[in-house]
Amino acid sequence: MRVALVVVGALVLLTGAVFAGQGLGYIPGSIMTGDMKWFWIGSAMVVVGVVLGGAGLVRPARNFVEFPKDAFDHVVKALISGRRWKPHDAESL
Image (cartoon, rainbow, N blue to C red; front, top):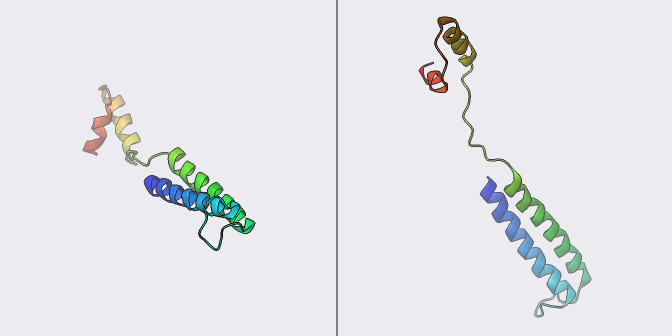
């Protein structure tokens, strides 16, 4: 999901930059060349692309290990029995 956000954000940013460049007249050869409406549309697309790409880069990865629901009971039993609980003990639940 993170990679997809970064890729889509980059594509939207690049497309918006082209639209803005055509709207300002820097990229000729299109009906959009010299039309300020396309500069504003392109500028908005650049902002959306930056937000999407930034969200993909800042969003935390979902590579977490789920803690078993009855692990607390397992820890309490281990403490009562006098042995030290270790995280790998949860695999035996």
